[in-house]
Amino acid sequence: MAKELRVALIGCGFMGRTHSNAYRRLNNFFPVEHRAVLKVICDVNAAKARTYQDTWGYERLETDWTRLLNADDVDLIDICVPNRYHREIAVAAARAGKMVCCEKPLAMNVAEAEEMVKAVEEAGVPNMIWFNYRRVPAISLARQIVEEGRIGRPFHYRALYLQDYTISEDVPQGGDALWRLDAKVAGSGVTGDLLAHSIDTAMWLNGPITRVAARTETFIKERRHVETGRREPVTIDDACMFLAEFANGSLGTFESTRYARGRKNYNTFELNGADGSVFFDLEEPEYLQFFEYKQLQSGKKTESHLTGWRKIHTTNSEHPYMNRYWVPGTTIGYEHTFLNALGDFVMALEAGACAQPDFRAGLQTQKVCDAVLESARSGLWLETGVA
Ligand code: SOE
Image (cartoon, rainbow, N blue to C red; front, side, top):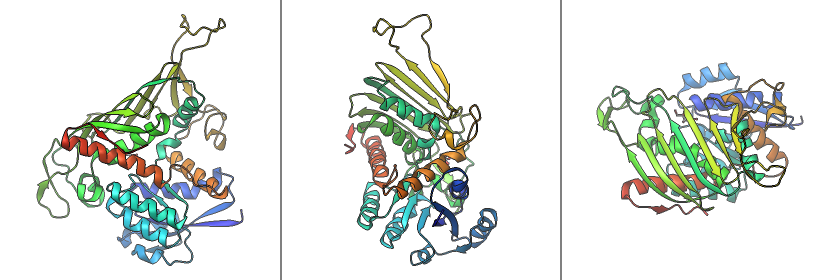
């Protein structure tokens, strides 16, 4: 392990923890040449940064991210701050010649995302957006099944992403913990925060989404704002449902809300084709369900008394990523999706390639999100511009 990958991570929230854990574990599980070094933790709040430094073992801390740009001891800048700050940091980091990894959604809107793509591509720096759910072994297996042609002609894609933590009117908006409820900081509500995941997975499995028709709702119109202490209008979409057309001719439905009582992080999808279907549910993340319209000995496709859905326990070493971990039958968790993403990033780096999903892939998802929000405003079917 000759080389170092010296990381500066900006933002000491929930996502910063998932990424820090991935950097710490990388060399325990992935046989890469680079050794991940937790070099700098950066947050405007020095106390938070200090706690992170103690917990995760970062070598030093900064409270001003611009000081990272000329830091000779930093190779990669990882952006885990609220969405409003992604563009400025990513563009500056790329221009400073740093590798850039960024939490999802890529930006507040398409214009910002385009600027970010331009910056990393002009600078020629490796970049990645953390759409971690692609790296759930069962979801990667779904992609493999699609690539192997086992689904046949696709007809339907159906995705749900449901949570319930904003049902109470007493939940405030804004501030460190609840910036996702403030459109000025988050860009949008469930569309950018949750549906961005569903859209990324959908386009990875089923190709470009070309047209959308959407409806959003904001159920609670005013909430106390943490920063001003006043009740202020709520500007995010609390719920979003949209219809989609895919370039391959299939139809999609997408639904997301933070008002589905009992649902904490319910992320599911199903893809139905002429020859098979796949179904995934993040509450049972180690399983992929697969229905195969099977080829019988006669060569004719039909169903029999043994036909049915298979529930594949994706823990064998033949399943994506699982040869890195334990023995067949034992499971991995949410945190490993970030570790798998990082492993892919570093392996691509060493192969002289750019890992997927990169910023350009993040831009495609951003285009769909923007079209969804615009469609909800206008009531019209809209082209996404994704080809
Ligand atoms: C929102 O609650 C959230 O933390 C998202 O921001 C993450 O991307 C998702 O994976 C879990 O839920």
